[in-house]
Image (cartoon, rainbow, N blue to C red; front, side, top):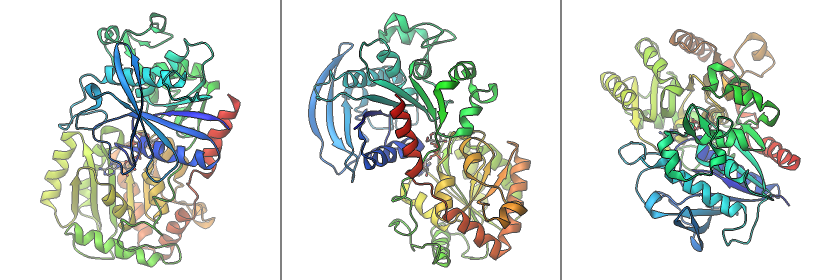
Length: 477
Ligand code: ADP
Ligand code: GLC
């Protein structure tokens, strides 16, 4: 049985800021189901919430700092989790990356460098846990130093680095790098140095035995200048080690048949009940209760990546069309302010909730007709998958995982029943607006619309096939 140490900075339901947590909470569970011995390691943030017991296991000393290792489980699973407990770094409110006011932690580099060093000790079986993995599977820049540090060890486990988002690289000034006391051999343009700065992500991209990213299209895109953020050269140099494996979803948690967060549960054969969830949404958001108006929703981090600016540009015209728009999001204050202003002016058409609300996210998926995902880039994206499972039709830009998972409505895709949504190509508000209008036309044809919903609901986006792809990758190592 392969032993995998899964290194991550967030995991649902312990702590979540985005899709990485969904994956860290569901992929290990799927792998355990396939007979793999997977254990998670992540920081013990003050904000972690769990009903499971937590035990003290050991203390390791790295770079003159003591860190305790605590053990728990991913709630309601058999997946062991080791929490790296170091209150001077992680014992504060806020999320993994920002404080309660939304400011990035000033000592992010120190925090995640410590986390990486502890993960290396555990990977080398020096954490007093009596377990040594065959493979260390790292995720995003926060764990990027792990493959780099492990490359210096004799008889080390193999390393896999999964890239969930190249836009976040963990770049820090050289002076910060000096504070971290990292081995000198790593500091070179072929290593963790990037234009004179320290790059955590390069620790993964340059040193991991295998690199994966979360969709086949994104794996190609990041080898080009438009998506590579200066790392396209390194990524194409490593293309033989790089693969794209599409994310799966936790099909138990995101299931309209059993979802306890929604008003009315439904399946393909009881699809008409979905409309009761729409009524509940309209009531909750004080919108006119009207079953005939399509409800468009968006659930997202409010950042440039997600195309929020394109939505802002489209809203004036959307207000003139027969639709309602509900948004749940949290992020950059400029977007939060603009959205609040426009929603306050049009309470009969737009409702927004600023903040993070897991239950509401489920209710929106269940009650909406259309899900907006006009991302400028999207390594995989999960909401277009959740939407399809809930019979909510996505409008998506043709990029990354959206291109791989949303099949555009065309005469031939309608007739062969493969269409699952509306796809547009240019990252421009005019193209988004066109897609919105196309959507309204098809929405006015109830039979076609229902077929579109069913096409999406019939897709299997569970981990069934993707977890096997990770297994196959582990086997090669
Ligand atoms: P990303 O990881 O880039 O944010 P994904 O589409 O992969 O994008 O995943 C986003 C995840 O975070 C989804 O599970 C989505 O429902 C959730 N999410 C994002 N913003 C919020 C919010 N404000 N409230 C609740 N859930 C949210
Ligand atoms: C990232 C990406 C998103 C992806 C998620 C999980 O945050 O932005 O597209 O779905 O990671 O892999």
